[in-house]
Image (cartoon, rainbow, N blue to C red; front, side, top):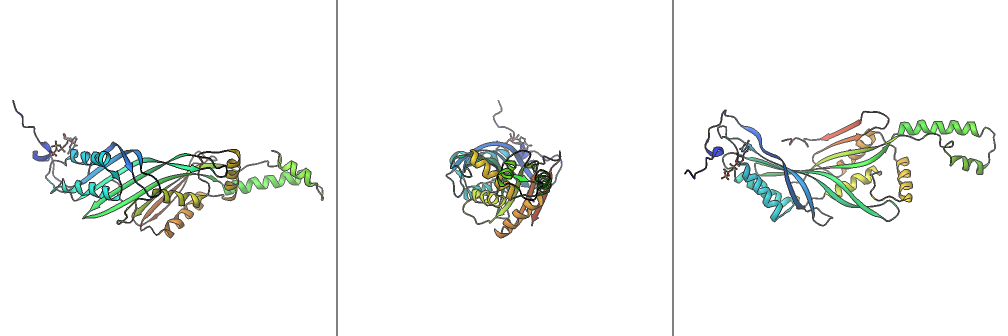
Length: 306
Ligand SMILES: Nc1nc2c(ncn2[C@@H]2O[C@H](COP(=O)(O)OP(=O)(O)OP(=O)(O)O)[C@@H](O)[C@H]2O)c(=O)[nH]1
């Protein structure tokens, strides 16, 4: 009986020679404990992608099991932070000596955060989609952090058109020079008074930033908070009537096209001095069946698309 198992990746000839930019695995199921500044370490259910390049032209293939097991160690014995990710990337390279000199690990997961209501003092959970990509190339580590922030956008054009209809209705209703404050106040509280409302829509800001290579901890919460503070109308978790009214006020006072939202976030990222960023604003229109989009890019963020 033969006991030596064939080792194709190590011994078989390549059908065709050539280098490859990335080889690895996608959709790896990987729960792990994620560490980020400002929150207690939290277990997330990530989908991982793990890659190395293949620069040896005649090698049959990479050793996928080594990448998979390194990620499993990260999941079961460690917590995910910049140090442990750097260790895993180092291992990807050292376990592929002669084959690879670049490595990439990407985690896609939802980060649950406790969010306070606007006025009522209640709180609830809100999950934020996060993609954390780390690479190593010639010994240099790079981290990219991508978050999706969902918010409400009210159309400034629609708001102006609605105001004009309200003015017209007012002119028709109160044609006399002097009017009763009581009557006008009552009328404003009716559907005939506010005869039109502007359309607003659920919107998503996809923001990807390049982090400093020397960071000692991730800070996802700060990135999310600053984006929400800038947009002013993030979707809410716990909502009582007073919160809903405040949300209506915030929407009315922060009318925005997708360009307005994009410029706000762009200016914010510039002040935070990220060396690289990419952002896409998506307004999922309620007026149109299509979406309104605005994109701003600095440098080459998003270049690591394995
Ligand atoms: N390179 C490569 N491996 C694949 C692919 N699809 C499945 N595999 C499997 O990945 C498994 C793990 O490969 P290796 O890491 O080389 O496994 P191993 O030889 O037991 O591990 P080492 O002794 O550490 O080299 C093998 O059983 C391969 O058949 C593929 O497209 N490319």
